[in-house]
Length: 191
View 1 (spheres, helix red, strand yellow):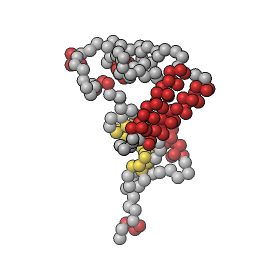
View 2 (cartoon, one colour):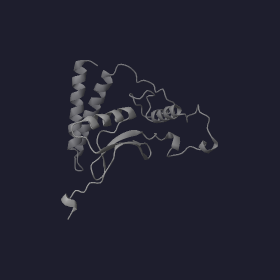
View 3 (cartoon, one colour):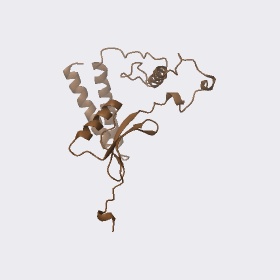
View 4 (cartoon, rainbow, N blue to C red):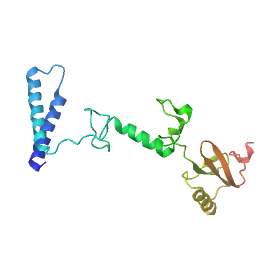
């Protein structure tokens, strides 16, 4: 497509957009015929500017249906199925993996093995005198979280106690530094 064709096609499409914004339930037939003529003109400009034939879909699904040029299989119907099959093969539940008898019927909502695995994180927490609170960004690496807590303990205003909590599907306290003591927030013990 050369620059002149690109400019003419862009102008025709912008004109069609203006027509679309101006349409109402009471648009007269003369205006609709004008929209039809502009639409044909835009299609003709597009036909002139396209030099190669449309790429054939690499998927058996479309059979004259819609084609998605961004998808590797060029098919709006087959691409999600191809991705799901690849994902299940990667997780070990696909066609290459041996299937157990309970997985023989396809499920509309998927099976447990197809769902993403929970992510594990290590949460650094500090004791603020009343309760445990998060004191930094949750980390993906346990050693990094322990180094962060060690740096906090060496800092100018360390907390009374720190702990490292492992979050996976549940929470588990892995290690505690210091002793958490409940501190009354009222002076003189609330006399």
